[in-house]
Every structure is written in C-alpha cells, then in structure tokens.
Length: 167
Length: 252
Image 1 (cartoon, chains in turn orange, red):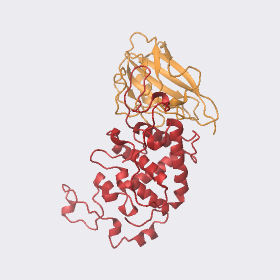
Image 2 (tube, each protein chain N blue to C red):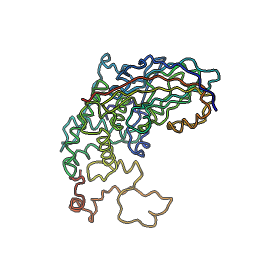
Image 3 (cartoon, each protein chain N blue to C red):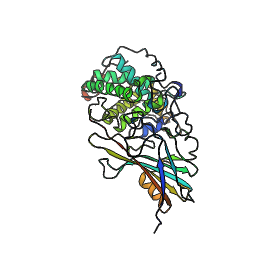
C-alpha cells in the first residue's frame, strides 16, 4: 500500500480557484493555456505531471483538456501560453516537458468549450513523482496514470469553473 | 500566398494529410517568465488585441472569375486552405494547387447543394476568429489561424455563438475533404493545377498501359501529365453521367 501523497498547493496568476476561468483560456477566447504555480513539493520529487480535466463533461469519464508531464522538479510553475506546435520548444524552465494527447486527440492545450446548460468544474491536478518517467510525448491520460503508478509522492489540485450561455 | 507568409514552419503537412482530420499545429513564438505568452509577433498576450495596430490583410490573389463563391469568401477560403496544406520551401501547397478554384467550381456544379453550407460556415468561421482572436481570420498570424481551425475542427467553436449551423466540426470536415480533393483530384475539376498534388505524392498520373520498363521496381514512372479526361474513353459526357452529385465543370 502506497503512503498518502503529500499535499501540494497549486495556484494561478491567470485565474482564481472556484471562479470562472477567463475567456482567453477557453474556446471563447484565444484558447491559450493559463499560468500555474505550485509550492510544497515533497522531498524526493524528481519530476512533475499535470492533468487538466472536466468531470462535468457529458462523457463517461472526465474530459481531458491538457496533459503536461516530464516537468522538471525545479520548475515553480508553468507559464501562460504553452505552444500548440509540438515541434516548438517548451518555455524556459520547463526542461524536457512534453504534452500528452487530450480528449480532442491533440497533444496540446485546448481550453473549456462546454455545451451550454450548466457550470463545469475544471480541475488542474499536479502530481509529484519520485522518478523521471521514461516515456515519450503524446501519452493519453490512461497511459500517463499507468506510467506514474507507484511513483506519486505528492498531489495538488486547483479547481475553477466555466459555463457557456446559449446564444 | 496568404497570411502565413514567412512565419510558416516546417509543419506537419504530411502528418496532417495522414491524420483523420487535422488543422496544422503552427508556429508559436517566445515565452518568458511567469506569466508569459507564447504569442506571435504583433499579437499581444492574454487575448488583448486592442493595443497592437492591426496588420494589413494579405493581398488578394488575382483569380479567374468565380462561379459560386464571392470574392471575399474565396479570399477567406484561400487563407484557410493555406493552413490546411501549406506550401513549404520548394513544395507547393493547396493555394498553389487551386483548391479554392476546385471548390468554387464544385459549388457551382455537382456540389451546388452545399453552397449555403459554405456561405454559412465561412461566415461563422470568420465571425468566430473575430470574436475570439480580435481580428478576421485573414488578418491573424499563423498560430492564431491554426488555433481557430483547431477549435473549428474539434467542435470547440460550435457553441461560441458564431453562427455555425450545427457542429463546427462537420463544417471543418467538409473543408478538409474538399481541400484534399482540390489538391489531389484530377485537374479536370479545377484543382491540382499543373499536377502539383500528384507530383507531391509521386503519383505519375493517368496511363492506359504500362510496358515492362514501367513495371520495374527500380524505375520511377515518368509523369504522364494527363488528366483522365484527356483520354478518349473517359470523356466529360461520361463523367457527368457517372458522377451524379459529384463535382462538375469545364476543364481549365
């Protein structure tokens, strides 16, 4: 049995927890990824992984909007606007971080684009790992979770909302 | 050539063509500290497009008289197909192949039932670009153009209030299919100008026979430079009779 992962504080200079995500980070705006910061990584953290998903989507499983992993433990966050070109270099400080395949079947960030009708709660989930994953880019959520199995020593979460109004 | 200009990257054109459907993932430039923005030159971060002076739209290409599309629709469509199958150094793209000419002729002929779909879809696409990125599609840089097309492709644009008639993904699928047809179809239909598409994929073109030398595995067949309709056995009359609902039109 694995010990309970340490709690990591995840924050954002781009948005506030529990509040609507600014449109610029959604399909109603430029659809660029927001900046995130974190603190409280447990000792022994070698690498980080980030998952951004919508459990309120009308799909059996939470809809995955973004996957970022192989983030160096030295990173204190991720800047706004991670490139949508998989061949473009990652922002400074992101080391060899790579993006996984989201629910749109794209290895990039795609922000909230929910059908109108209700408020959706979007979760940014950060994982601290005690190992450097030996994997390539483009993993799905299931593949990433399998690769991380037994190596998660810290976890943090930031939840923000978004709702589209029928126009 | 269209908006992408010199910022065009060695993008995943071939990957694009292989994909089930794909708008290109395009250029992204510069990113600094926290927060920063991977935004392209001339476009301010955080979607604030009110500060930078708007760039001039790319010049309109001289083109033959249109049969179905308006000039504005054709210009917009040129910018779209230029991102779907961009030109690369020494390698032409969908604009060079005349994909828009193909679509225009098709909409005036065998695909005339889709004329309204195009009118509505193109207007919605341009409205979506303006609503979300602050400028019409043709005036955006390649990164934002690609980002718009991805949102249209994935259906993210459907509920944005831009006026798509149903799913934006359905309109994108139509655009991509017709762009491919205009790139790689028989030049008879107005696209694949100068056999650009066939040369790109190494298809030697229509031949009615292949001799022993043509069948050697170590020989690359010389391009025939012939449309199927250049042969006596496959005439325009035959084409019209056999392809009800398909593209039609006079050869160039």
